Image (tube, rainbow over all chains, first blue to last red; front, side):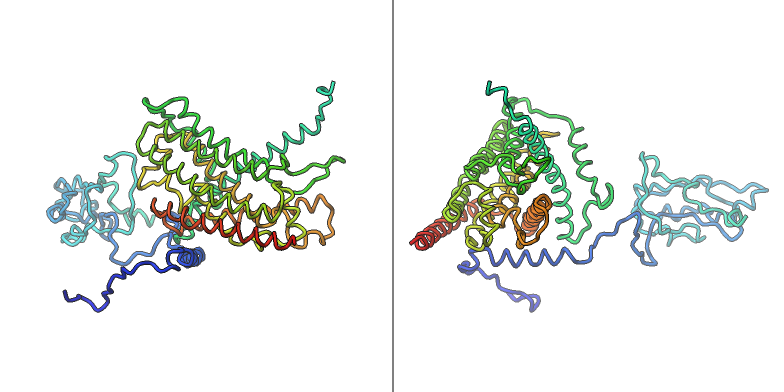
Length: 168
Length: 347
């Protein structure tokens, strides 16, 4: 059979020589290698104290965005839920009442917006599908909770803080 | 009336010494588990335990506490008495060996000379050899009493391994005994104090002893009785809680004692070069000697760990071939050559 690469090596099946049978030179060589590794740079990242640098396209936990005036951008169009291959997103739409213009950007908004973080596969399709730039994936990751229901993130977990209230 | 004229100072001294040696071996064994994990981590480019206390130094306490709080499980079909006897024997035998090791020279406390050796018996090496052979009974009894085929296989392996490697170990020791002419470990150390270390005269003997010590303590690459991947942990498969802890602890104490033995018999024990020309007080010299011995022991313990994280486990047939067809002929040759040289020097 023709080799796929020129790196193929035939397996050496010749019987062990006397020196190889003694094991000792091979063991000494191996111990030299392991000893060198003692002084090598450790691959471990001590997680909570040290954090690894993420790439700019890292997809962490989701956030729901607001516009400059602090109004929710989401209009509950449902495109993210449709795009979601894991079916992790559910939402309930509601109509904006008069006097709520400072809360919601458009006439329709999401009264309930839930992402099940245990179902989510962090593919980022929701982010791509969103026509209103409402959902983004942040750099936060590794959520923890004591109960499964704690992983169903509602609006209070997802919405970013109001920029207007922040400045006050 | 002779019964009443007991030397109370002597008894107190021995009790204190025994407690000190016991505590020392337990603490060293405890921190060997920490050291083992650290060495393993470093060799594998990791950091090792570093959460419990500074540098993870409280990790052994956490592990010990965990073992104490674990549920104690004794299998229904096991032999209850033997099941409990197994780890007890392993632990007791592991601690017994340290009695004849000279941990240092003599200290003078309040005018009394205190030898830092629990018992200077004139058959020290024979005693150690005997006790080491009993050590395998802990494993055998435990593996048998578990009523589990993996444990039983492990104990069969342990027994045959000890038989195969005790022979070359004994033969290597005979060569050393011909050279030193004494079985007392104290005298062996004193001889090395005024001469070169025995490893200079017995390099091959030391090598054989080192390899067989690995086999006797069931350390990798000879850890067939506790092979995790073939025997599910081997003889301590059915054990939990502190009984498992005893088995694991006994292994580390054995490692400590074998390191102490190798340091004593081949590397001068508490003697170190330039010891007698230092010109310090005898008490300080004794303490320095003890520290020298301790450093030697730690180096050996590190070596044990270093080998464990380098060399893969032997196959059973390789183990037997190495024992019977390499180690024993080598040890025999070593013994014959040593005997011939000793005889030639006498004439």
